[in-house]
Amino acid sequence: MAKGTKWVPWYRRKDNDGNLTEEEKRFLESFRMNKNHGAAQYENLPVEVQDHISEIELALYDAKQDGVATKMFGLVGVGVCIPFLAYNDVGWLSPLWRYIAGAAFIAVSIVNYKREWQRNADGLWMPEEGEGIPFSRTQESLDKNWELNMIGHRRRGAIRDDDELDD
Image (cartoon, rainbow, N blue to C red; front, side, top):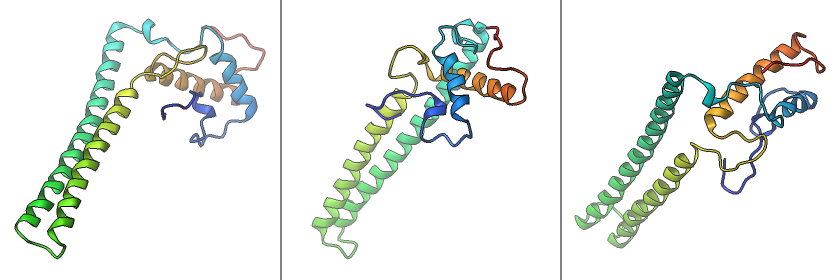
């Protein structure tokens, strides 16, 4: 989610390609705005499960950051090779343009590295707090899974709007 944008639930986002009706979205919002959402709370999960989820989250975070660092080092390597070739007078461009291109490669890779690194770091936690907004991406995933199951049950007729649901 980009900085400066307001958080919205997964079923209200523009990139959601699901087929939920407006009535089903309002049905889910009744749970989102309720103090006790039906999904399991991360804090209430067994410690072993919390540890395993944390390990998976950190492994994914590390893999993303490794990809960003690898891309940056590759572009810096290209940026260093271009002036080296200019110094040895290899290529058809004038040396000045090759030095400029090399410096541009290095500058763009470093700026991109910082931007991607920060975006990945910000992706671990929710940027806002408030009613209906989960604490973390993990809690958002737990809520989404529960809500998808709830819609499935509702479509099969297992529950109705006026049914009371246990926590």
